[in-house]
Amino acid sequence: MDGDAVRERAGELPREPGVYQFEDGGTVVYVGKAVDLRDRVRSYGEPRSRRIRRMVDRADRIDYSITDTETQALLLEANLIKRSQPRYNVRLKDDKSYPLVQLTGHEFPRIEITRDPDPAARARSDGGTRTRGGSRTGPTTSGPRVFGPFTNKTRVETVVKALRETYGVRGCSDHKFADRERPCLDYDIGLCTAPCTGEIDGESYVADVESVVRFFEGETGVLADPLRREMERAAADRSFERAANLRDRLDAVEGFHGGAGEAVASEADERSVDVLGVALEGESATVARLHSESGQLVERDRHAVTIPEGEPDPGGDGRAEARATDTRAGAVLSAFVTQFYAERDLPDALLFSDRPDDGEVLDWLDREGVAARVPGAGREATLVDLALKNARRGASQPDALAALRDALDLDAVPRRIEGFDVSHAQGRAAVGSDVTFADGSPEKANYRRKKLDDRNDDYANMYDLVRWRAGRAAGADVGDARDDRPDPDLLLIDGGGGQLGAARDALADAGWDVPAVALAKDEEVVVTPDGTFDWPDDADHLHVLQRVRDEAHRFAVRYHQTVRDDVSTELDNVPGVGPETRKRLLRRFGSVDGVRSASVAELQAVEGVGEKTAETIETRL
Image (cartoon, rainbow, N blue to C red):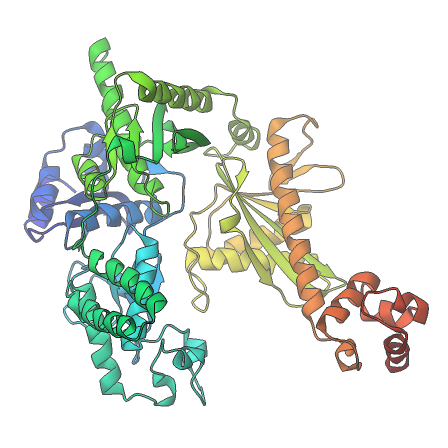
């Protein structure tokens, strides 16, 4: 786009807060936030740096989303950066995002907390969306509606539960909702009015849903008033525990839209403090975090951050170079704070090595009651120096992942690696595992597992497993929920050339472009599409792959054992053999055939199996 095209598009944008996206052929290349969308986008008509000029020249479309507040724009920007990984934004290698609340577009809408809303809720049929206060997804109010994002997940969960208890909006899946003959447990405990079985008519249910919408649009009394009446009734009935619970819920509700502001903590009240130091190295950075509780350091970690290509050239002048470095450090810290704390509690105070360059981030921290400062001297300055030393050590130490990139001739350092393995017993109880490592460490929250069709074919099983992951990531499989984890930099297949070939076929069929290699167990040989590598046993980059492979294998075997023990067997029909005894028998003898061939004495050696039960097992099997 040239300057005239940008200014023309800006003239079509509203003068409201929100988020804008520059896109190139449908790919998001930059995400930004604005207090006034029209003015902010218009400024790109005359880019102030080479990097921004390249971004604008590359873009062919500008999209936008409207929000009610600057804070909502700040959080939505962080979510979109994590989801799209645009190349011209500072990006934390992290997959956390801020929660949203969605009312689905069903005839009887469902309420849910999500980090990946229905794509229809993000459709831009009128050129933009609203993420709260009307949740506009088009020129009409039909279809799914999304509210948020929000900073405090616990408070969101409390409010959603209170809304369900008050208005009975369903939270069940479509599968659970369909073809029911009687209401489920949610109806019995007062969380749902059971539209699935006609316990409430459609018109009344829609009216209740609209009350929920009114609350998210800012009408706090829609929920606060009935909660207050219920609390007063509980107190009058001397049900003090319930009254206290309702009081806490009411506090959460009244503070949800900012009605109950949080006081800024004084230094004496700062029990939880995070210290952030940043070290820059080319197009990457390392942020080290020290976490202190009640004055004691309890946690240290480092995080890799990608800096957009082509930052402004300082021009060779030493002072200018120092100023540019300061600016880049401030930009990294601004992006890090909003992205890192997406699903983590904010501390009472944040100490920075450099001042974040985004005033809106500092305003947001102030509204959240977080003290933010750059210490000049004293113990706090010492802590910042320690964080900087940790960051520099992380940025300069020999990197096994960089060595892995060089050894495999990859385009980028494989900071995110997913490992795959399958496990079964002669084709029975077949399962697959998908584990995730980030910067060489396991991310167990991002582990996935899948039951596979029972068959004694490792290649077909590996194809199905990788095809399942790739299809959900690439959006090729409509029947499955989209996998919103970041794309890995490398896939590691447990096996040899056959398993790798099956995995690559699955990637090609799904249209998911991710490099993949395999690691065979016996000889520890790395198999790639171009050949094999027999690296030294003490090679750090080989150890990285071995850790991922071994964890994928462990996770698959563990799941296989669970599935194997849970399958229905002939033992279910043996009197005196319950689920626990059946599991013990299968673990001891490996299979029903093993149990069948065991003697009465061997059966009695299993906990819970007496002489009579052992004889019954022998007779029945």
